[in-house]
Amino acid sequence: MAKDATGANLWGPHRLASLQGIRVTGVFSGSCAVHSVIIIEGGRVMTWGRNDKGQLGHCDNKRKDVPTIVETLKDHNIVSAACGRSHTLFLSERGIVYATGDNKMGQCGIGSQNNAVNIPTKVSFKGRSIAKVACGAEFSVILDVKGGMYSFGCPEYGQLGHNSDGVYFVTSNKLSFRCELVPKRIIAFIEKTREGHVSLVDDVLITSVACGINHTVAVDTKKRCYSFGFGGYGRLGHAEQKDEKVPRLIKAFDGPRNVSGVKKVFAGGSYSLAINELDVLFFWGQNKKTGEATMYPKPVQDLTGWSVRAVGCCNSSIVCVADESVIAWGPSPTYGELGYGENRPKSSTTPQEVKPLDGIHIHNVACGYGHTLFIARDDTEEEKNKIDQLPDYTP
Image (cartoon, rainbow, N blue to C red; front, side):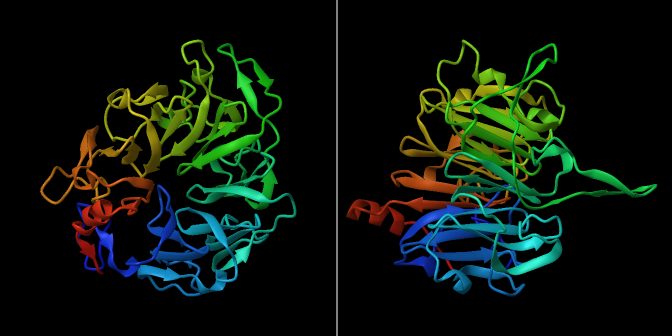
């Protein structure tokens, strides 16, 4: 549901005609990405979309309008992926990460800074197997199987979590960044009191991570939530707009009002979301141009009583799978990512059900800058018939 090759937007869900008969197991994009990744049965990976920096991994810079097998990874069983603005990480079953695309800030983690890497290249990492990958606009974060968190790429705003924004003067009036060119472990996690007293948090093993354009949110095994990077519009959830250069505990999830911890986090352009153990969705930051920012995590009131299963974050739109429904909202301008349908409103600042998907069980969702991908279940004849009623999309 993004722009097609002729520039028209798809305002409602369409089936990708080229994937007829192909079983899809994973969908991936990113809040500042205009490209997408899917994993199909057997661990093969397909990519399409913008490719100006080689982010699709096809050894060229040609845009692909339909999902195309990444031949260079065909001998690897790919289990996950993440998309930055112009780079992509692929995670293999063996816990090895491959990167492709823009690398001028070292966000591919291959030990060098160069304009673009257009073939998936192994990230320079000698540690344990990697279990999760995430991308900001120009940086990357990976988690190992034991909960270690590593980051690389552009350090601006402290978004790498290494207690530095990496800025230095090249000349008296020209600034540059000391980028991290290989994954570097994030070693300190802190807690701050209202008075500004800082203490270290012990025993932090990270299980879930998500990146916005310039910030990161993460959850540990004790269901505690941390954030770091750019603090504007409250996206870090600390009730202030300061940048945080090391992961800082979000106190709002710690207080007596909230009895259960966080299990998963998500991040859009300048906002963050979390699902707690009761499947309640929390929001903080700002996803619209006007009005007050939400400075600390608050439950999304319109979804009270819904059990949220999956979340996709566009630049400013949010798409949730809750119970048996898909619910989406986002301010104008939108590009069809909300999926409301051809003759429906194009945007909404309050959560609305995505009616064209009524009766279709959605397994998972992923969002790019202005597009949305869904994996739908087709186990029964009834489900197949419902899906067959959706229009086909052939660019």
